[in-house]
Length: 615
Ligand code: M6R
Image 1 (cartoon, rainbow, N blue to C red):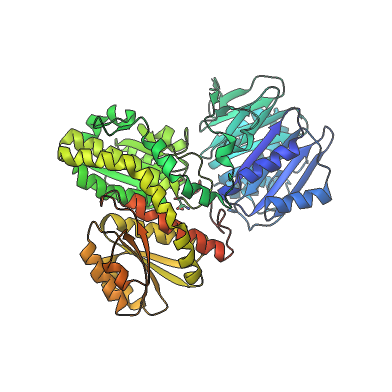
Image 2 (image 1 turned 120 degrees about the vertical axis):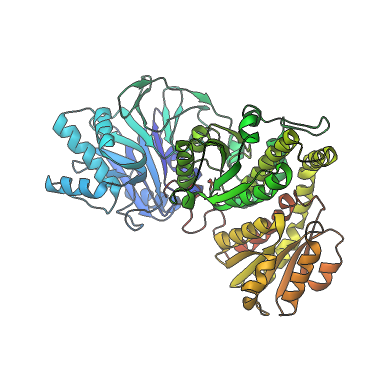
C-alpha cells in the first residue's frame, strides 16, 4: 500500500524523504514522487517505477534543496501506475500539494462538482480531487489550511492518511488519518510524518500515532496541535517512546529482508514467550488472557479472523485450541466474514490475527464482531496498530519489524502466541493431563533451538531449489497440524517466485488433484514422524506410482519416506502439535532460494503490498 513521508525542520528535506521512502518500499508500490519547498518555489518530481528511478529523475530535473518536503510511494487504486497519477498532487492554483494513502470513495461526484466550478484535472486519481476540494473550500470560506483540510475531510467518504502543504503558509504541514496509519516524529525543532516510524527512527525516538479521525497542525517552532476532524475538539497528543531501533529495520548483512527474518526466528520466538512462559514452574502468563480468562472459559466458540499467512496461523490454532482446550473453533477469511452476515453472539470470542495490525478486512471483521457483542482479542505484531487498539484485549507477538512482504517470522510467532493461549486455557479447564501440559511447556521452551537446527537445511533447500526453479506448478501436501503448513508453503512459493502452487490436505489428493501428477510435477510433502505418518506414507506412494517428483520434509533419521522420495529435507523431532513451527522453516527457505534463482524481487514481489489497508 502507499507510503507517505514528510519533513519540516532545519535539515535538508530531500535525503530524509528519499531514505524514508526507501524504508517504506516494503509496503509495496509502483510509482514514487517528492515535493520540496526551498523558501520560494515548490519543486516536484514524480515517476512510475522505483524510488531509485525517482532519484535519477530528480537529479536531472530539479535542485534538491529545501527544508520542507513530502514524498510518496503509490500502490495504484484509481488510475494506472504512471508519472501523472503518481503523488504528490498539486491543486489548480499550484499552491496546495498533497500526498495520500487510502481511497476517497465519493471522489466521482466531488470531481463533477469541481469540474462544474472550473477545476481541471490532470490525473485519474481520487487524491487530486481531494486537494482541489481543499482549495475550493479554502477560497470560498477564506479558511486557513488546517480548517480547510478539516472541512474537506468532513465531506469525503473513505480512508486516508494525508499530508498537505500550502505555499501560502510555508512553515506548516497538516496531517490527518482515518483508516490508514500515520506516525508523527517529534524532534528538536523538526517534525517528521510517515506511514510508520521507520523513516525517522534515526532522528527521533519520540512519536505520536494519530488515532482514526484525528488531524495534526504541525508548525515550525510551535507545539503540535491535534484535534478531532469531526467535532474540532482538541486532543492532547500522546508522545510515546519508540521501541524500534535502526538495526532492526536494516538488512544486517543479509541479501534480503526475507532471509534475515527467516533467520531471526529462533530469537524472536524466544522474545514472544519471554516473561510469559515459565516451563520449570509450569506457568503460562499473558496479561491479556489472565484479565479476560472468564471470557475465554465461558466462550461457546472461538472465531478466528485473519487474511493470508495470518489466516494460516489461525488454521494451525484451530487444531491446537480444539486439541488442547476443547473449545470449538471456526477460522474465517476476514474478507468473507465481514460481508456474509455471520451469526455472532456475546458468548463468542473473536481472535483477530494480523502482523501489521492494519489489514482493512480484518479491521472491519472485528468492528462487526464488536457490534454483535463479541469479545475481541487481537494477536498483532505492530505495537499500537489499529487492530491492536480496536481489540478489547490482546497479545503482541514481539517479532520486531517484518519488512519482507512475504511473512515468515510473523507466522511462527503468531503460532507461538496462540499455542500459549491454548495451553493456558487447557490448564484452566483441565483438558490436558498435567504431564502433557508440562511436556508442551518444556517443548515450547526448546523450540528456538530446534528452529535453529531446522535453519541448517538451508544448503539442502538451495540444492533442491536449483532443480525445481523452472517448474511451472508445485503441489504442497500435509495432514493435521501440517495441512495449514502446506497452504503456507504454497503461498510463500507463489507470492515471491510467481510459480503456481497449491496446498492440499494430503488425503484430498485422490479427490481431484491427483490428476495433475506426472513426472513434471514437484510435490512437496510434509511428513514428520508424528501425527498421521503411516497415512502420509501411503499418500506418498500414490504420488510415486504416478511418477510425481517428491520432495519430503521428514524427521531426522527417517528411513521409510527416504526410500520413496526423490529429495528429503531432515528436520529435528518435536511433538505433533508444535511441528508447524519447525516444518515451515525449510519451506520458507525453499521458496526464498527459488525466487532468488528466478531473479524475482524477493522483498517486494510484484503487485503485492505488505499491509493491505484497502479492501
Ligand atoms: O498484516 P496481516 O498479517 O494482517 O497481513 C495479512 C496478509 O496480507 C499477509 O499475511 C500476506 O498474505 C503476506 N503477503 C503473506 O506472506
